[in-house]
Image (cartoon, rainbow, N blue to C red; front, side):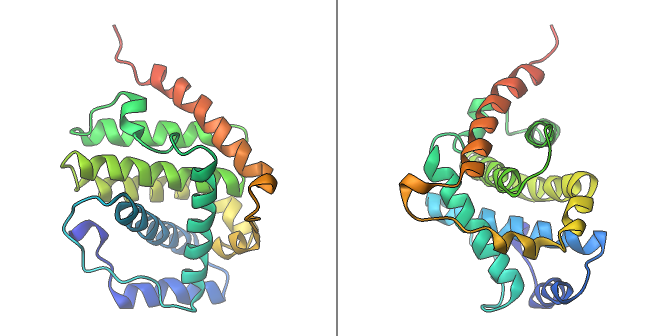
Length: 213
């Protein structure tokens, strides 16, 4: 499947920028690379039948690999708290997966709502969980090409909304400072807030996406 194809040269270029202050374009490229990793992980986790892409994971030990590992770990934590929130996204939003415009509008609407009250790493993780959940829905409904659309949408949203915030924190590597305790009784409050907020956002977006009568 071409939508997740990424050359080793591109991966090396993405990792190189972690050693200096990244540009806006580089931050967006990293965001999309991380999104591909996240989606690939969730497709495998879901056991979805799909044509395996010529896919290269980040080089072990590299900074991009470390960021991806932390992002996935936080995503696991988030999805553990409320396992049903990030599944069946399309059904929860009551949207058709056969229209690129509908999928794009729905994803961007949810993304905008998630960050209405500000930006946190918890909300960034939530954004990736939404993208992956929607991508799994698309592949399950025989719309694998939509995965590429979702990755591009996330990249565009990062460019318009998150780049300035990311630059203030020195880039994506800042997420590695987030530590999640494995004790269920001590789960991070910011992840709980993110998942609870997203539940409300889904309800709000459902009405926003209803066709005009």
